[in-house]
Image (cartoon, rainbow, N blue to C red; front, side, top):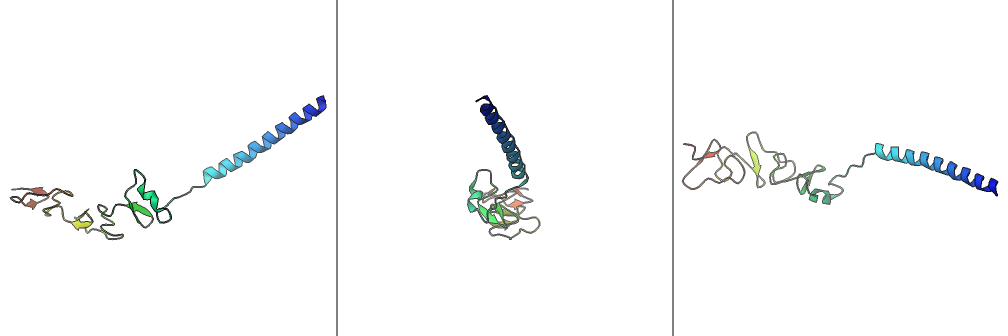
Length: 120
């Protein structure tokens, strides 16, 4: 009976050692593989809190209302000196509705000059 118990303990020890090595291999392989989730395959990834935006352009989450490289639609880039406001490229130095920054509207008595309302 003692020999049977000793044999069972040795088998259990051998199984745990082998299992530990296999688990280590799986763990190392798992850590070396990176899974990249892109919005072209998983569109809901753009709805996650902290995402750059809810729209997907070239496998990246963007905001078409404010992204200067994807202004209003994917790939539409604003030219030098312009910014993207509400999906349109505007010049913040002279635009009455977006003076200096998006949604900064000058009143009727002032004009937008150098990105400031009522500069003079």
